[in-house]
Length: 208
Ligand SMILES: Cc1cc2nc3c(=O)[nH]c(=O)nc-3n(C[C@H](O)[C@H](O)[C@H](O)COP(=O)(O)O)c2cc1C
Image (cartoon, rainbow, N blue to C red; front, side):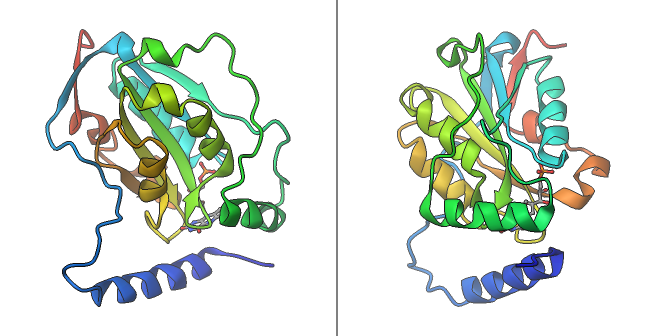
């Protein structure tokens, strides 16, 4: 299968067209978040966790960790890396994403999620949902995350948020979920004002 950006653009146009015709009473399954106030947190209580194959989500995660005054930044890695070729990786990930498979991930040494108050989770959009290693990490830590303030950020190839925020919110039901954000991967590294993801949501005490 050969999937490129045009496929995602086509997919997102179809999605937008379909959404425009949803009745006003349609169930809100956006998972966009239930808190609209800024959350106060001290800088050593913010954790940023991400998975990234080609660096877009990593860039956002690094920016957000810095904007949080030097938050702990943790990369999620698949125990068995995905195929390096883009198309092969897409083929490998497709059934996992469709089935919600929990792809095994590397153990993260010395990380105590319970020690943080706010956890920002970054994923690329893979087949409209969370990249499987992110699903695994969130699932493995769900009991702890449910007692925290959490927020998803995502980068995509043209499809936008699709089901990522909804699927994340479902995994952490019970947590305070701040509004998720989606960034176009191809331009995220040159996007001005990226750190507003953090400043719009958090008041980080002790960071400046
Ligand atoms: C396996 C796979 C599936 C993808 N599926 C989608 C998709 O459904 N919708 C979309 O907009 N982009 C999709 N993309 C594109 C990525 O979401 C996009 O390039 C993202 O910014 C990559 O982030 P990264 O550089 O952190 O890995 C996919 C990419 C891969 C490798």
